[in-house]
Length: 135
Image: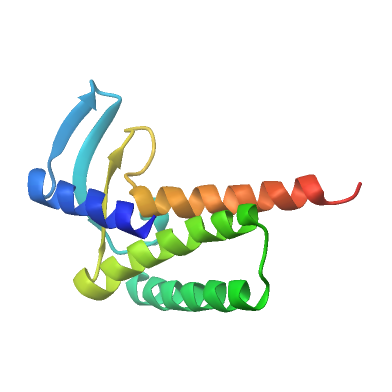
């Protein structure tokens, strides 16, 4: 996931001028090159330092957890989504000070592949927990 995030952000940075949009599906979906100093989907834009520290703590925590608690391939994949997304956005925060966002559905804040991976991983983790939990 980290590699896919880096590749897509690099393509957007090279092909789409900062602050502009390339329509993909009319007025519904576009590729918009913007920078985000906050959390996923542009939330809390004033907390850049906090989110950098959180990225580092989450990444270390996930690696330590998986090393100490070998899981099923499913659990490892779900945690891998979260780790890959965390590393992708963390890399941007360390190198650029902000995160490149570019997927624009116009009815939702602009986001990136890392945001999608983190969100999907968290939703799948919660769903797995709820489905396995005895009634």
